Each structure stands twice: as structure tokens, then as C-alpha cells.
Amino acid sequence: MSSSSVPPRGPSRGEAWFCTTGLPSDVVFEVQDMSFHLHKFPLMSKSRKIHRMLTEQEEERPARQRRRGRSAGDNAAAAPAPETEIEEAEEEEDEEDEQQEQQVRMDDGKSYRVTFPDFPGGPGTFEAAAKFCYGVRVELTPWNVAPLRCAAEYMEMTEEHAEDNLAARAEAYLAQAVLRHPGEATKALKSCEELLPHAEELGIVARCVEAIAARSSAASSRSWSDDLAVLGLHMYKRVMAAMAAREDVRTTEAMESCLVSYAKATLPGLSRSMRWRRASAPVSSELEQRDLLEAVVASLPADKCSGRVVTAKFLFALLRTAHILRASDAARAALERKAATQLEQATLEDVLIPSYSGATETLYDVDCVERVVRHFLAEDVVGEDEASSSAAITEEEAARTTASRPSAVAMVQVGKLVDNYLAEVASDANLKPAKFCELALALPDHARVYDDGVYRAVDIYLKAHPRLTAEERDRVCGVVDCRKLTVEACTHAAQNERLPLRAVLQVLFFEQLQLRRAITATLLASTGAPRPQQQQRAAAGPSETWRTTAVQDSHVLRVDMDGMRSRVQGLERECSSMRRAIKKIDGRDDDAPGSPGSAGGATSSWRSRYGCKFSTQVCDSQARDAVVSRASRMGMSP
Image (cartoon, rainbow, N blue to C red; front, top):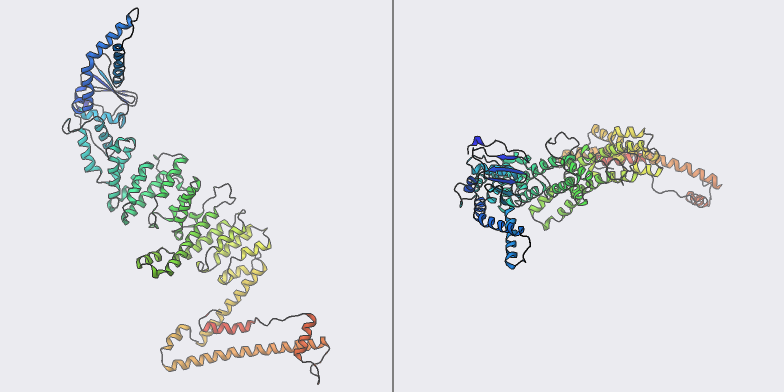
């Protein structure tokens, strides 16, 4: 049979395939709903199974024909004779022969019909194996080598029956061209999904999985990660488990690449934009997508991801998709903890997760973001606790603990992200004040350098919720630290009619305090008063520096004392005025000689009469200036 006599492509399902050699076919093979009209001798020369099947039928043909003839004669008799044990035995043998003939039977006494209902690979693989039996060159590829190897085992096309047979050819191609490259092994593994359990019994699946895991860390092989997306869920899990068992840094990075590629190719809802998705990728059902998502989550590295491949955007996209697909609570909790490890890299668009639950009235899932933030902060607390007991752990463990803790820069980045998120969700009319305050107060003080961002969110919230009670309004405004507002924010807050009067007064007070600090710093700079750093440097200088410093300190102290003396004099004048007013009320004149009472007694009598109590602590703004000036000079805050 020449290659030109074989059609380059097999017929469609349900059709017949004829071998055009000029000789009539003497055997018909039925594979699923395809019929192959072939010749028995070329196939018997390569396949031991076909040789054995047809040979047995040739040997049993005369006996089978005699039994059929005797059975026909008995049926034609007028009166049936009593059945004997011998006749019953012959009937049982006929039934067994009929069962065997279901696979191999003759049509017209000359040609055989062989049925292969479970042929591995289907009609296409049988066609390629038949061409090989006729001597036609069959090109092996990563897609057909596993089906042909299974077909060779099924048809017993081994070296024991004929040299250079199909099984040996397929094994050589697997070892030399497929298992050496993870991309080619992935294609072969995909073809094995329809060859189970044959491919599993031959070890093809295990060898392909091991080849992918072993060679995945090679830098030149990382471009094959997109090919892994063709695998089904079962095969994907096996590959990920084999890669995770290697515990290699390079293998971990390759595993992350495979993870991202597989998720993007199999989960349509992973991105708000569908442009990245392959047009040929089939759309799975919601249940299948949920299983795929949970498998991807289970494949995430146990430690913190590198951030180069499994980014914060990818993790939050998985989290958003988990809400859409209603994934299990365990999968969503695992994603929230994993997303918290890279929260400082997230953007506002990443954390805007819509609320898909009917129980939540808000547009965005604020509870989910709050849980992620608290997971992020929990790392800082755990890191501090572990670092405090660093004496009981090794240096390597201490270094790893320090590396896992969020840095000060990361904490500030998360603070900005949360403030922007609050400003975005503040306009939601269904967002309760308690939930807004919980998220705003979840961050520690050092997460915000300035409170301008949270003040902006508060202003938006007050504008969108005009019917808040006075208590709720005070609670919302209480999340802002007025001491950490910039001059621009203070100016805006002082003129903001939506803020309560108490908040405005606080803003004005701290604005004035900042102004005084600035004036004090300017005066110190103009008089040449040394700053704390200059004092430290002067400590190592000559004695002349000490004299200069002493003179400057005396000058500043004299200015402070003068201010204090003026204030005391003012207080004395006020006390005198109050004393005269008290005398008029009591009808006494303490200045007259022989007066029974004194100023202290008059004051006690007046207090006892009217029940008035004066505080012993006086808040003085000028005295505050003196303290501020000295504190600024010493490098301390008042």
C-alpha cells in the first residue's frame, strides 16, 4: 500500500474508510461509528491481537458451520424430540460462540467484521495505526504519540511480534522529543485525558507530569506556562502537586506563572475586561468555574508570593471572582489572607469589590476590605510579638519574621489606599456610620502622616448623609485627628458648615497651635538659638561654645520670665477686681481696720453661700507660649 492510496485525512464520523490498493478488502473494522475496509494480512503482520483473533476464527469456522447446520435441521423437524443433556451442552456452546462472534464475525463467508468498541483514541488513532501496518510513514507529534502508544498496546504491536513496531517507535519519540520539553509534555498530557485508564497503566501520565515539574524551572522553558492552560482540572492538580513537592525557588516562580496563566484562561470573570481571553477557550459552567477557582486557590504558595507574577491585582481579581461564583468560605478566607500580604501594592480599582450578597445593601463589599486590612495589620502585630521573643529563635527565623512584617512605607501606602477607598464608598447612602468609622479607625496612627485623606472622606460622607443625628455626626468627625491636618485642610475645615461646632473649634485650636509653633521656630532661628542637633555637636566643641549657648539660653529664659511676670500681674489685677466685687456682695469692707474677715474668709463665705467652686488649674495661652518656646528649643513637642 502506498502513501498516495491513503487519504490524507480520515472521513467524518459515521462514514466508511476504504483502502484503495486495487484488491477487495477482506476484513472490516468497526471503531465507534466508523467502518474501515482493510486487508487482514498487513494488519496481522504487525498486530498480534488481530492475528490471534482472525486465526482463531479461521480454525473454528468448519465446526461452527456444522453446528449451525445441525441446529437448522433440528428446527425443521415436525415433532420436536425430547431434549437430552448432550443437546443442552451443544446449545450452551452455541451461545458462547455467538458472544465471541459479536467481536469477530463473517459477513458473506469470505470477509471478517471486527468490532473495537473501546479502542483508545477513537477512529483517528486507529486510522494512523492502520497506515503504519501498511507501511505508510506516520508522523509522530506530541498530540498523537500517547494515543498511538496506547493503541499499540491495545493491538499488541510490540517488538515480540514484529521488529521496529509501533510501540517501540512511540516510546522512542516520547523519550527523545516529548519528555525533554515541558511544553511538549503538556500537550501529550492533555491528549491523555481521553485515554484513561490506558495512559495511566502505561505510565505515560506519570512520566509527563514528572517531566513538566522537573524542567519547569529552566529559564528557557518559562514560555510554555500558557500551554498548561489547556489541561483539565484533574491533570492540572497533578502537575501543581508535583511542582509544589520540589520546594525550589525557581520552580516556585514557574509555578506562579502557570497558576496565573491557567486562571486567566479558564475563569472568564477574572478580569473586568474580556479582551485577554482566548477566543477558542470554551466557557465552563458556573459549577466547573467554582471548582477551577478553588483549585487555583489551593495551588497558591503557602508563603508570601513573589509579587512579580502573582500580583495584588491578580489576587484581588480572584477574590472578586470568588464572590461572583459564590465560592466556599474557606477559599474566600484564604484569598483574603493572601491578598493582605500584598495590600500595599493594590490600587483603588483592585479593592472596589462589588457586593454580590443579597444581605448587604451597600454597593461595595466594605466588610471584605475591612477583613483584608485587619489581616494586613495582624501581620504587623505577629511580627512585633515574634521579634520581641527573638532571643528564643534562630537568626534565620528572626530575619524571616522581619522580612514578612509590613514596612513603614507599606503601612503608609495602605493608609492612603484605605482613605481613598473611604472617599469612594462614602457617597453610598446605605453605608452606616458605624461601618464607616470601623474601617477608618482600623489603621494605627502611624499609618497616616497627615489626616487630609480621611478628612476628605468624612466631608464626602457628611454631604451624602445630611440626616445624621448629632451623635452620629460627632462620631464620624471623631475619626479625624485635627493635629495631623495640613494648613490647607485646616483652612477648609474652619469654613466647613457641615462639621459640628466642636470639630471646628478643635481645628481652629490646633491651627493656632501650629501657627505659634511656626512663629517660635522662626524666632529661634532669627536669634540664633541652637537646635538639639546643634547642641549635640556643640557638646564636643570648646568652652567658648558653651558660653554662647548659656548666654542664648539666659536670653530666652529672660523673655519667658518677662512674659510670665506680665501675665501674673494681669491675674493679680483680675483677682483684686474680683475681691472688691465680693466685698460689695457680702457688705463688708476688708480694708477697714478691725475687720473680722480677710479676703480669704470673704471668698469662702461667698462660695459657701452660692455653692461656687473654682478650678485650681488655669489654661493660659501665654504660659503655653512659654512652654512651647522652651519645648521647641529643646526639640520636644508641647
